[in-house]
Amino acid sequence: MDQQATPPAGWRGGGATRLEAFVDAAFAFAVTLLVISADRVPDSVRALVLALKQVPAFAAGFALLALFWYAHVRWSRHYRLDGMLATLLSLLLVFLVLVYVYPLRLLLGTFFAWITAGWLPMPLSDVAGAPQIAFVFVFYGLAFASMSACMGGLYLLAWRRRRQLALDADRAADAMGEVAAYGYFCAVGMLSALVAIGLPEDAVPWQVAIPGTLYFLLSLTGLVHVLGRRRARRRVEAEGAADA
Image (cartoon, rainbow, N blue to C red; front, top):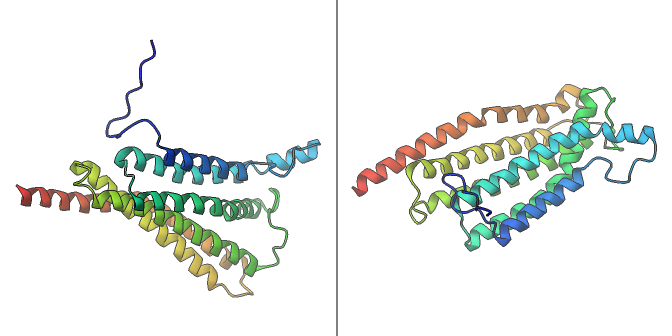
């Protein structure tokens, strides 16, 4: 006899709602837009090699999309909100991911072509200088920041409804930790876009690389999450003491 799998501790349910299924389908479709050799099936060894050279950019793009997809999965399972605002934020996330996939593919392909000195294929055919690359960075930064703002908004909604959801101190603090982390994502994306906007038309290669290198600041996200979580936990404990 088949036994129903026990959901992980802290999860509010294992079955996906229609909205969650729609979000999953949108992310799956976005991944298909990243897939190697999306235009046509390779018909020669040379075409196959060229398609395989797109694997690094595809893998990096897949990882970034998976990051946002799993963030929504965890939010759905831990907090299970289905109000109007939560629905609108989830639908906005779907819209943004389908927009985000295009600059993601172009930017990652350009990055890998750059670091391999052209050995990996360049996806852009009209790169004539700094303005074109800066435009891609601006587009990417705004899309990345917008998606991060959506996820941060979903977790902020869970934080504000912590009493309605009867969240314990750990789960409530986790929500605020995620708010801090995605707020930091948003800030880094906007900073990169602003720096890209400020690039001069005659920028040298190291200047053009600055908007991209700013994303290495995301390595500090764990610290931001911990700080946000600690602050939220102190607030929840203070509220509990006041109620007592």
